[in-house]
Length: 297
Length: 206
Image (cartoon, rainbow over all chains, first blue to last red; front, side, top):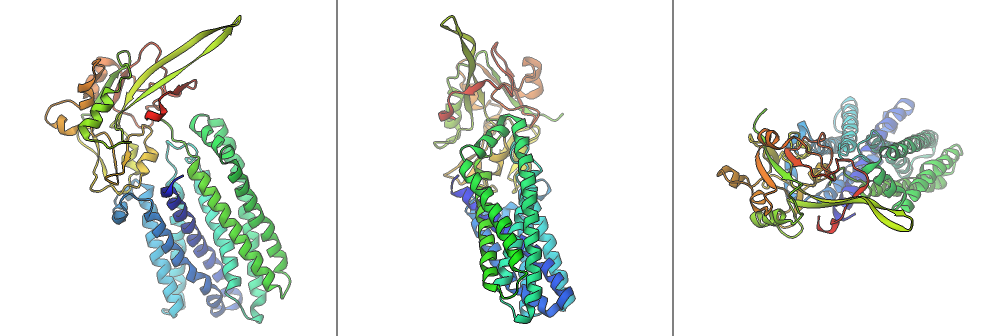
């Protein structure tokens, strides 16, 4: 893998993190608003929200390193009718614009509550469309290891996982008052369960995907051999870190969140779980870009 | 069907000399590493042990000259985010270097490896079928250069009427993917796309 693909790796992982965080954040916001009112919901979710746009901005800068002529990035739009790459770029831009708008409204408390919530949910829809388009970019008929339903599923699951654990870390990092401990801990528990469920889906999809590649022969089989052969160590650590981060640490997060006054432990657990999931996703994406074989010559 | 210009290669006559590849590089002034036309040396078969003697069994070797196939279903054009790739009325598929941003998505998609990145121009380039010559009524440089007269050029339907419709010599991919505008005349050992027991022998040249 060379620099250009590292650029793609950074763009996709950071884009997934920003979009996933936005989606999870609005769900959490809605839950807290229902349980404890809108003021607290805004206060607890605003800190993580401030991360979304900067992460997305770094993602965009990274993406430029992939292009031969980065100054002409705006030309990547016209073929939206048939190119998923155009669609990815367009959704990424609109998502970022709406995320920036929502962040600004939340930060300055501009606009009515209803308007801000509506903008927030529109941003969530755009985030979802962006992640879906990102996965569809790789659905190329001549790339058998990519051209399976597992690709968009993995992009969506990866994004939600980074968003879930990122939200857990952001929530605890934001700090809260003693009387808010209950609601924060309830949310952390829900996020921990969500992470474990997402991990479970990954661990169901992956063996099916690998078994499928094995039956296809040709370029698909070459890719599979690359994954478990040349990149076998990276592949093993991808799975191990995912299991420890989104499984073991998430389970501890769940358990410790049922005990009051464990804020420091909870913070360590949430940060480590997110860090491990992030490294795992980076390894996974590295293998993804390094082990694809195109049909033909 | 609209007019579709196409290449023809007779695999009986091709010796793998690569004059076509060099003529192409010369005509289009391609930098080192960019090869719009490539010649694939493909070999296979095995030796079997018969009472201590190694006997060749079904051993074969042949060369396939290939460039952009100016496909009826150009997958490069479909995936390109910029609309830099277009298909002319005569079927020639072109990349507009003024629009291309060099994202290389087309090179992920094309099963013939036709679009290649030009490090000097920072954009993707590929065989343009010498459209400047074609527009003057001449023939592409590769076709003209072949010392064995193994190549021909013209409207696909005329080439097919003359030479048949075979477009699937291994190691090329299945022609159903992009419907390439090409005709190959197989020789007696030519395998079809998807053949599993052969391999490319000149990878460092490709």
